[in-house]
Amino acid sequence: MAKKIITALLLTGSLMVAACNTVEGAGRDVQSAGKAVEDAAD
Image 1 (cartoon, rainbow, N blue to C red):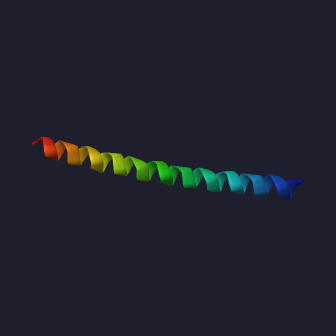
Image 2: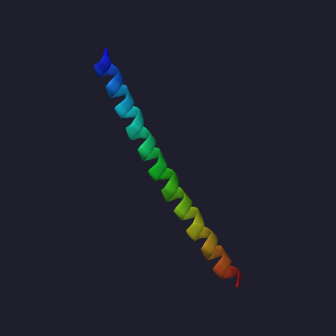
């Protein structure tokens, strides 16, 4: 029983870390796109 709980917690933690990295990468992409638009407007 405890082994299943530990496995579930590790899996959930791994997914959360992966999701944070994905969101961070998307944020960088949006930021660079915004900078490109800003530079083009000048």
